[in-house]
Structure formats: structure tokens, C-alpha cells
Image (cartoon, rainbow, N blue to C red; front, side, top):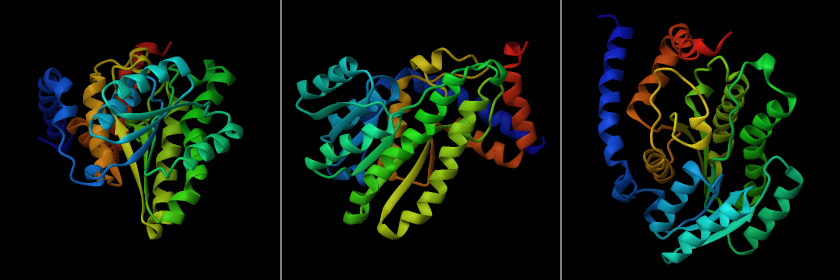
Length: 291
């Protein structure tokens, strides 16, 4: 059995394991044991917090006593999450903010910092429009790049002076396997996540001397609104609670890179070791969409 065949067998085994974990995932977030950054109370800013992974992660972190700053465009949905946190005795502030509008970011961050420093920034907000590049509108091309890449950069730039002054802080940038192994029909999205990952690696070296940590969290295909409107044949979509639990672990441990599941850890290695093989696998998952 050659290495690629062995890897495929391992993936099949882990996918079976993930099916078992899926049945237990609703309790997974509450079972985490914080031993790193989250051992002490933190003030955490999460973007894309009105739904999906951002919402589930915010609820999990608030249940552990951390203070949450919730960022999203949808103010009513954001207020619902904040109210849910407060109803259980947690602390949350909802801030409606369009991350594709850099002019408003600085003022909003200044208001947030006036109430105290931010300890952790989680750049979770993002969007994906699945279609061939030649058919994608200019507006959607720009939205993916502006939100997935520049939105994260603008927030980091706004918070860096505070992080550097305190010589402390953590930045967690949420990416995707597509940032490493791009797939047809998501060329622009893949490019935005690849850019975010490369930026994170460069920034990590710049900020290490200030005691600031930078982590890339590789999210799997997830049962969010965005995930459910994309179509990848043969790809298992994992529950939001499972992925949120993994994101909380990444925040706690702040490694350079953290993949959300064992399967995705193997896939990242396969992409590095056998890039052409991985490219063919990604292409085969969307072949039915190429006409």
C-alpha cells in the first residue's frame, strides 16, 4: 500500500469516528478543559457572531465566564445573541459593524477599547459564493476579498497599538482547507483564505517579540448557512457545535495552525506532500458543477 492509499484508509476511519462524534457534539463544547489562554478570564472580540460558528463559539466562551464583544452587520440577530448571553449571567456587548467599510472600523474599536482592552481577536466573519470565476459578479468578487481578507486586516491594524502597548494579545484568523487546497468554483474564496493564511504567517514573526500570538484556525465544511449553500460531493459537513468546540480549543492553545478535525489535519498534510493528487481530489468534488 503506497502512502496515498494508506492516507485514504486513515481518512475513511476518521470519517467514521467523526460520525460518532457528531452524535455527541452538542455536549462537546461544555466538556472542554481550558488549560491555556482561557484559564483566566479574557475579553474576546468575535466577528461574524450573529450566527453559525461565531454565535456558537461566543455562547461557549460566555458560559466559561469570558466577556464577549460581538461584531456583525445584522444588529437584530446580534442583539439576540447578546441577550442570550446576558440571560445566563454572562457579559456581552453587541456592535453592528460592516467590515467591508474600513472608515467605520477605527471609530468602533476606539469606543470598545474605551471600556477596557481586548485580549483576543477572532476574525471569523466571512462569505463564500460558489460559482465559476468567469460567471462571478464583480460585486461578489469584491465582497469575498473585502470581508474575508481586508476585513480581518483592518481589525488587526485597529487593535495592534493596544496589543503592542500591553505586550499581550492573541489573534485567531478563521480559514478553510480551501486556503491550502483550492477547488474549482471557489477560486476567489480560496484566494482570499490563502492570502489570510500567508498574511498570518508573516504577521506572526513580526509580533512574536511583543508577546502577541497569531493562530490560523482551519475550519471544516460546516453546517452553517454559507456551508449549506455550497456543494462538494463526498465531503462531510460537520455540525456547528463541533466546529465551535474546536475553535474554542484553538483560542485556548493558540498554536500556529489548528485544524478542526483529525481528517482535516491529514488533508492538510496530503496537500503539502501530494499537491497534484490533492488538486485532483478537490476538482472531482465539484466536477458536476462544471458545465
